[in-house]
Length: 298
Image (cartoon, rainbow, N blue to C red; front, top):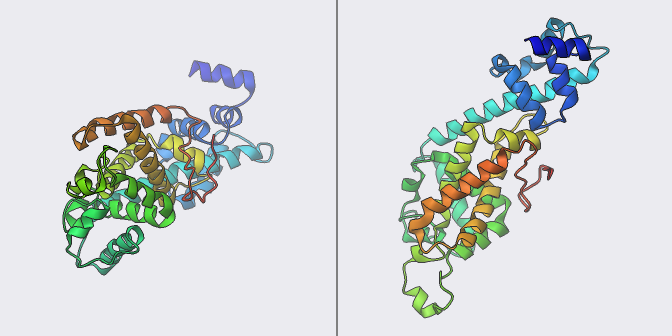
């Protein structure tokens, strides 16, 4: 309190003014404002402007002589409230189980097949063909139990909005681990002994990783740097696309001997992403076609 009092006397500005004027828009500013205004995290978006007016009045700040302050506060508060709402939206999708009696769920699953196997008709809803795109068995429903509809939403978004990358990753995942194995020998092997992972299962697993980054607050750095105001589900899905592509590269670089090393590689990848997100200027910027939100490479 004493230091704040001295700082205000010396600069003529309150703490919020110093934060807004001394930090550029994005995570650096919004994270500090969030720590200062913890009690405002639950406000409704419609109440943001009134809340700022109340803050200005409480701090005895003249809005006419400090117009930039209210603009900066509004942008940061929208980011804070938007992040909270995004966590709730993602959690709702995660908790919704896949229902084979729900036509919308089934339509999404069929779209996923058509996007990833456009030239191969599916023999039936229950089919071993699902293994060709990386599911574990003949009914993908069982693989969505951990992440619910969130896993399906992310996989379909990736396949639809960055189709070339998704198809390339699927193709790579089905290639022999050892280049000296010829095609006839490879076709006699099990599909799960390809480059080392099953595409769809890894997509669900990376969904879990993205979810954990979100709910832990680690993704605030990235989302506050790429979302001008309220982070949305679209931002989260684009982050998933980025993580999928980066994990694929990381997996190849690690060159694991088999799928049994998956948890080790995933944990190492997770730690690397967390280290990157500790930098307040960090933005996990997709550098592929899925990015249509003008994400800025900071």
